[in-house]
Image 1 (cartoon, rainbow, N blue to C red):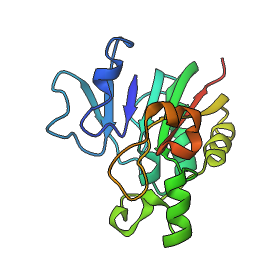
Image 2 (image 1 turned 180 degrees about the horizontal axis):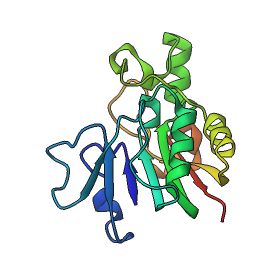
Image 3 (image 1 turned 90 degrees about the vertical axis):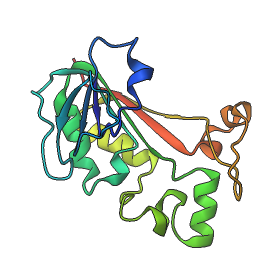
Image 4 (image 1 turned 90 degrees about the horizontal axis):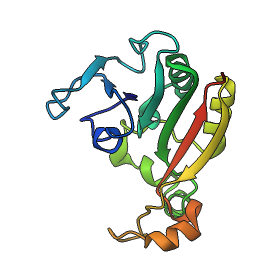
Length: 183
């Protein structure tokens, strides 16, 4: 598994039992990144991930794409790294959540793209944008899922999971794109 934009490697404990090898990739190696994990350095806005074409079984980008200047080029790069039949997983803020739509109506910008988030969050993407990018990159079986974890407006509390499962788009702060590279 290649974790692109891995930060401190927080995904690793969740996937360790599912994959043989975890490789982190980011612009710098954070001190908290696991010392026993492989790490590759890349400026995702200006460079290629230093792996061969079709080398990875699974490529993830958790809360990364919204930080990049060219999300389409990024999805193409994820596809390049993934072997035929391999899986790509991308997460990003849900611009169609109740919180984000309400914030857009009131403040004229999405919830995860307020002044406090700038210049870190620069590319607000909708579900359809991710599906289109996957298709443009030659990926198949693209689907959008929801995290079922969303903040209640004007509070720091979150909706009960059962409620978020009933209204996933409305009550999930993040979306998940999964797609496969064709065989």
